[in-house]
Image 1: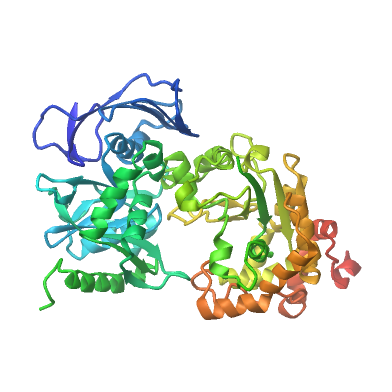
Image 2 (image 1 turned 45 degrees about the vertical axis):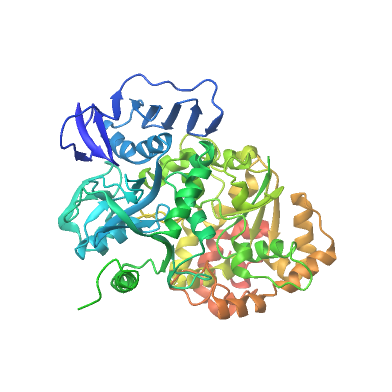
Length: 306
Length: 299
C-alpha cells in the first residue's frame, strides 16, 4: 500500500497516485483497491447516465476506462474496463472519484485551484475551462505557493475558522497553456496518454492548511459582464459558491444544499466571495495579477506596496 | 419530462435571430428584448458544463470521441430533466428550444449523437444561401473568404476540434455546408421542419409562426409579427453596439454584421462563387437556391 495526505485525509492506495506521499504511515481514512466492481446498484434512488447512488454506496462508471464503487466515503474499489489503459485510471481517481468521495463524506469541496497569499488561501473557482489552473500557475510563477489544483476541500478548524486543505497536487495544464505561460521546463508526463494535457511541477507547493483569504469566481470578460473584481451580495455569493461545488449535481442528490448554503454564507460574510471577470487571453494575465494584488492590499491579505 | 426541439443550423444562418424571436414571445407588452439575456436561454447542445454536470466526469479528461460516445446519454438525461436545479432555473418550460451546430451524425458506436427521439421530439433546421454564409462566417472567424469557403467545402468540418486546449464547447462535427443540411434532412429519427433564412427575412411573421406550429407551440400571426418588430435587425445591431453581445468571438468586430440577402454578389469574386456552387449545387437546388447564370451555362 502507498500512503498519501490529501484534503486533510490519509489515503492508502494499492496503486501509485500523483498525490503527496504521507508524512507517516497511520490508519488510513480512505482505502483504494483494485477489485471486482459491480456494473449496477440495486435500489438506486439518485442516478445519472454514468452514476448511481444507493444508500452509502456510489457507483461511478467512466465508459471504456473503469468502474468505481465508493462506500461510505471510506473505501474505493475500481475495476479497469476491457481495452482501457491502466495508467489512464489515476487521473480520474484523483479528480472526479475522490471529489465524489469528499461529497460522500459531507465535506464542502469546491471546484477550485488555490494559492497562498500572505498567510491565507486564495481560491479560484469555475467550471472546466474557466482558467483555474492557468490562474494558479501564473500566480505560482510570481512566487505564490500552490495549495491545490482543481479540487479544494474546505473545513472548519478547531477554532471555527474556515480553512482550505492543501493536496500536494501538481498542476494539470493543456499544451496551449504550457506554451502560453512558458512552462515547458516544468512539464511532466501527460495526464492520459492520449491527451495533450500534462502535469506541471509547481514552484514551492505548500502542504499547510491555511485559513481562507478570499474566493474568486472566474468569469470571462464578455457582454454583459464588466471587467474587474466585484463583491456580490451574500445571497448571490452563496449561490455562486454552491454552483462551484466540485459536483453541483451531487449537492442536490446527496441533500447537501443546506450545508453548502450555510458554509457559502459563512465564506461570503467572512473571507469574501468575489467575481473576477477578465479576458481569457494569456497576454491579459499580467494585468489581471496586478489587479488581484491591488485587491489583496485593499482587503488586507498583503501589506501595502513598498 | 420536458420536451426539447433542436434548433439546428450551420453557423451564421440565423439561429440566434430565430432564438431571439422565440424569446420575444414571453415578453410583456412594452418590454424590449435584451439580446444577451434572451439569446442565452436554452443554451447550446455542445455546451461543456451540462455534460460535466450530468455525467460527473470532467469532459476535458476525455478524448473527443469518448465525449461523443457519452453525448447521447447526456441528451437523454437532459430531456428527462435530470439536470434541472429548480430553485436556480425557475419553472422549467414545457418546451425547450436548444441551439446546435452539430450535424446529425452517428457516434463511433453507431448511434445518433443527438440521441434520436430520446434526445428531442423534433428539429427545426435553419438554412441560408451558402454564398451569403461565406462572408458572414469569414467575419465571425476573422478569416479570409477563401478560408471560410474551405471550411464550408470540407466534408469533415468541425468546431472546437483542437486537441491542445480546452474549448469552451464540446467538439461539433458539422461536415460540409451541404453535408450539414443533408444530415438533418435525411435522418428519419425525428421530424424536421425546414426554415430558410431568406423566407424568414421576407415574411418573418408567417415563416416564424409556421415553425412554431410545427414545434407544437402555435402562435398567432399577430404574436409572430410583434416578435419580428422587437428583434428587427437594426435593433440587434444597436444593442450590440451599445452593450456588446456575449456570443461574439473576441476578435470579431460585430456578431450582427449585415443580415442581408444576396450580399454575396458584391462580396465574393466570380471564382469564389463558382467554388461554392460547384461544391454545393445539388443541395442548393434542393433548398431552392438558384445557381448563378455563369455556372449554369458551363454546367
